[in-house]
Length: 252
Image 1: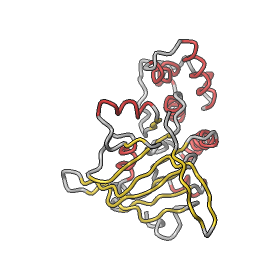
Image 2 (image 1 turned 45 degrees about the horizontal axis):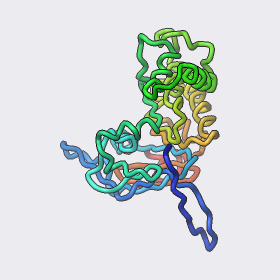
Image 3 (image 1 turned 60 degrees about the horizontal axis):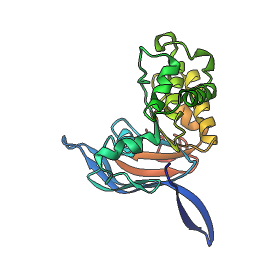
Image 4 (image 1 turned 180 degrees about the vertical axis):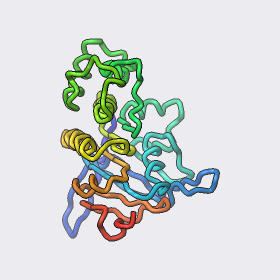
């Protein structure tokens, strides 16, 4: 399990406690072509938060997401997830970190020759669990995303929104404390996008921390969650319940 770190904050003379899940401190990343991925990037994210990461294309949104599941490593700085030093984690142990996270991509990344059930179950088979345990957990998450009746269908029989629901089910089937979403509604129409966001909001209400990179103004404006605005690799705005139309964000 990912262990949470209890941090005490002093707020206007009083104290409040929250469970810190992610701590990013002074992170910098410059690619070989000279493009700045992130620069002096610092942020703390508590357990149970729902965070939108916004900014123009190439601003650093995906770089930030990729660093959290160690697809990328910073040139300097530190990243802790539940007390785990992600930056110094040895390559041979990265898979252990990723087993504790869920990741949802824009292009679904489903295996076309496997059924809906098999695509989701695949994420649990690495744990060598009993088939009955796998069946129970897979059907539980398929029911959560509204696809219990389509367990035997194949990806080519599904609409785009249904494929993304499968991808979400696969990402949460191992009961992660953290769900990372990189433009999960990017290939979907507005109505389907809001259906997917309802699923994600339900998952968040169950206690899962969600970090979602997006260009979708309507989603950000409707949901009014915490918003991190990245520009040229820098975190320039951090709004508790922000929108795309807040000062400094409206030009994105």
